[in-house]
Amino acid sequence: MKKIIEENVTEFIKNYDNRSDSLAGKLWRTPIIGYADVNHPYIQNLPKVVRDSHTLPQEVMEDATVVLCCFVPFTKEVARSNKNSDELASPAWAQAYEITNAMFPKLNEMILKLLQEHGYQGRIAPESLVFDNQILKSNWSHRHFAYASGIGTFGLNNMLITRAGCSGRLTTIVTNLDMEPGKPMEEELCLYKKNGTCGVCVKHCKAHALTLEGYDRGRCYAQCWENAKVHTQFGSSYLQNDGTANAVGSEVCGKCVTYAPCTYKEL
Ligand code: B12
Ligand code: SF4
Ligand code: SF4
Image (cartoon, rainbow, N blue to C red; front, side, top):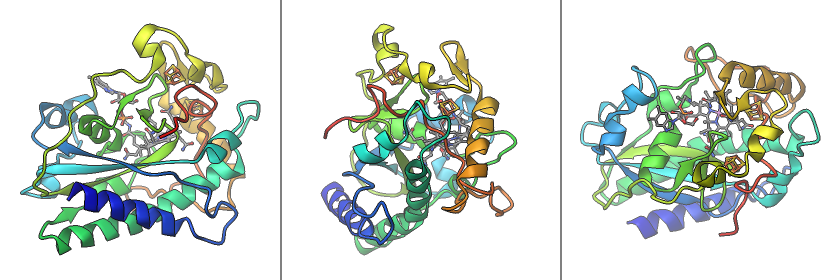
């Protein structure tokens, strides 16, 4: 079943990349898919690690077994468009964000159908579709599920770093698939966490939201807002809890994600 899912997701993304916008055919690379064990203590502990109200997979689907985690890496071209010398994110970075966010519901739908065809069920956690712009935390952290599935580790830049790098986006689906889940990676993929070197992401954060001492989500969000005011041409895909759009434009920045050793890795 893993192979079938992998093939179908790869094919779907390839076909979806065949659009008519300026990033057509050069937006994504081969996705990386992992499966997180819903009964793993790391997952059961998420309400303590992320926030009390963090949803557990069993609340989304009673007979949940694994959470399918899909990381869709951006191409080098998209990652490198977001130059650190520029104050704001590149238009291509904002566009990639919106196109990918718009693609995910369709990808999810395809996976749900595929699961059904093979006698399984899947559900999207409703909390994964919204984001509270007051608290700046979700009740469904894609990154934590992806970490538990073994597809990557957390960087100093907060990103999930995978074997394809950290420049890309994540989606997750709760399933009752009968398969061997992954487990957290033993190897540390962030150089700073591994041996105290690098720290490039911190140097790139002109808003001083990311420092060696920690991360200020309020400052980071303010910088994303500066971008949203300018990058209004690609829409605004994130919703608030009440279903209305979160911002006037694309809430992006990502300088800590680009031009770093963990940005892009050849697969
Ligand atoms: C709210 C949110 C924001 C907020 C707050 C960001 C933040 N770091 O929390 C704002 C608007 C500022 C933001 C900014 C960005 N975001 Co954002 N954001 C989200 C969202 C909706 C929820 C994240 C959340 O709940 N955070 C709360 C914290 C507590 O959970 P967490 O960040 O997942 O996990 C952290 C901690 O728990 C801690 N941690 C890890 N292990 C452990 C263990 C223990 C024991 C403890 C105590 C803590 C701990 O480290 C983790 C990483 O910081 C997710 C989508 C989703 N539903 O998951 C996207 C998401 C995290 N964002 C993403 C991205 C790419 C960005 C930006 C680069 C913007 C852009 N696209 O240009 C910046 C990067 C900022 C940064 N360096 O962190 C991607 C990350 C992809 C990846 N490779 O990991 C996500 C997953 C969206 C997606 N669908 O792909 N974001
Ligand atoms: S830029 Fe360096 S320190 Fe920052 S997350 Fe990537 S590897 Fe870690
Ligand atoms: S997204 Fe921008 S503001 Fe936020 S931590 Fe990264 S570089 Fe700093």
